Length: 108
Image (cartoon, rainbow, N blue to C red; front, side):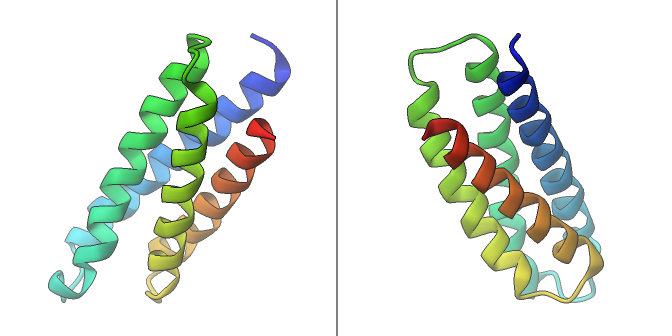
């Protein structure tokens, strides 16, 4: 795989892992109901990053389409996580913002 693809694959894998970590950590917060939207977006973002990574690795003709979706959900996940002061949410915000930018840059 070329370096550009490998770099994006690393970003996607990191975002998937961070969203799964944030998802799990949110489930252990005192007020889980307050974290519901964050939990949902963490799960969806991790899943979309996984699919994007798979399509990217297989050089799919849908890669550019899924990159746009991935950038959008990563941005939305980051915005939701930013609302919470938990360390895992703040870290997830950074990782998701980075992933959204990387997807946009690759697709440009």
